[in-house]
Length: 392
Image (cartoon, rainbow, N blue to C red; front, side, top):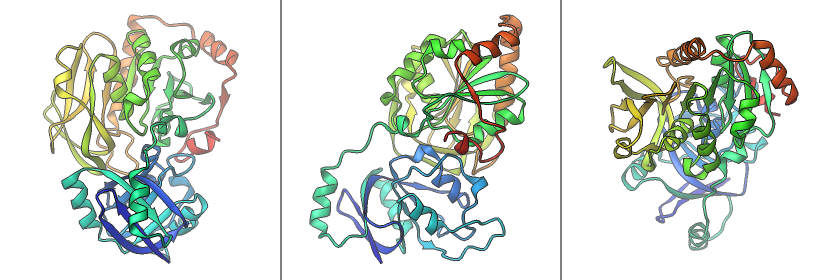
């Protein structure tokens, strides 16, 4: 079956359909990762987007349940150069085609993804329409121009209820703006008692959980579409240690008085170099974001830039000058990607311990009692891939 991808500037790509049938619209973006297409598909930060993979061969190692990063894929379309229909991997449980069919996602192969990527890099990300129908191009273009991209992605991907992944050490409240299971995996690997809360959790609700620290997760879309989270963070800043990742980094910046803006084509892939300004060391990082903190908005805040992107100089890390709080734009939990930056979870835990020593908290039993009154349900261990089951 034929499939077509139409960009809002009128550019048309024709290829072969796989996955589901029908029509879908979304922002067309590209990912430069060589491996990890399943983690890309299941990353909630891609909610509402049509994802182009620049690596030419996709589907060759199939789909494995344990490699999911969320409860399900939230993308609106998948664009590849070559789709492998017969995966070769002893871990594979089913094919890429069957995954897309299960979740109603349209795929298109046989596309010149190099040309598509160059066009996005030159003109910037734009709306696209992916279809398996035979509608005339003129009709599709009018339909696309009349389409408004979604702005409620975070509420679509966040958990709707509080749940826990029990541990014996520091209690970390993870605010789920679209959290990948890799974040929970890294925290529980360090013995943390993780309590996951919805994206609209208030400061008072989080206080009642008596956390040792708060982690603001990654997530999709424009940080300014989540103003309630900015309010919550500003109220808790200084009261608890805070660590922000990706969207959580942007929300942290907004809560501290900085500003954000949209990038021309974003950073998406597992090979982005980031410079630590304190050590002068360069880390290779995994990234997936379309917005950034504006450099000139930092001057009138109490924030300090800690990391920058070596490719374009954009801000990749911040820390508060007075309070126990820091954030990074990239993904220290990787999945897929390098593990250069996993030490940041250790830094977060050390910050919690230093903060507790300087500011004695409630006894551990009082914390457990406070959580039980909220009806927090344990989700079992959080080994790789379990967050998306817990979210059910």
